[in-house]
Image 1 (cartoon, rainbow, N blue to C red):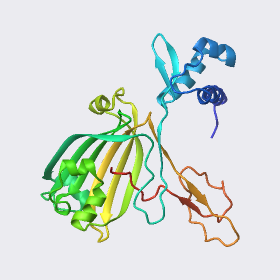
Image 2: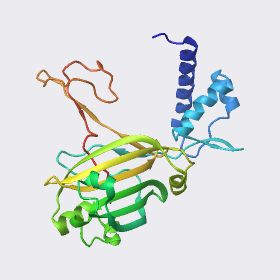
Image 3: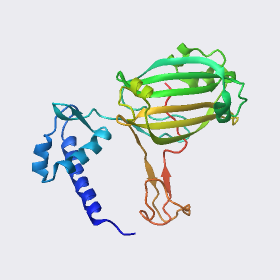
Image 4: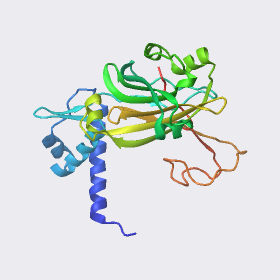
Length: 281
């Protein structure tokens, strides 16, 4: 494959400019201004288009905020959640900030074709549908849609859902012990309606979470899909890299985010983001 030298050079120059601006951001606090485009172009010795391309990336990433007529400012810190849990624990460390919820809908309805396939029940079976806006320190952060089998949580009220943990409620009142969850995360963008709830521009980047939770009998209990703001929320994974002479044979293929050959052949890698769940309280 032939690499375009001009395109490669432009990309590398933008990356150097981006790193220089990141240093400025890291040395400041949220809300602090950074130098003007003119000053940065002069200091870094680059053209205005090159600088703006780097700044645009940082604005989209939620690290900088442009204010018309005022300049550029360091954005508010992102809410960080580390996807690490103690062995055999069905929970995660709570993400940063004070989390609250605003209930958007709470109803009992037929599962329908799509959700029934997820929960492995009849399309006519009843489910509890809950939609809520999740806020951190009063700022909209996510839209969450829960679908719970109604026969496993009869009598569940919106007040109970708002006040306590759903899994504890299922265990204490209905004898349902949740055991496993499979969760996926992928990038997406918000629709106009979602943008209004999250107070972001339409088509802003977001993270889509989908989770299917099963109990100790293998029954699907809950299907959830949630939309998190991409400019304010990030996920941190922890990898455990074994060391020592006696090691199990490595599986074929490679792990996401780790190029093949980055570690000595045979070193097992444990990725903590597999089979985990977000907190429901």
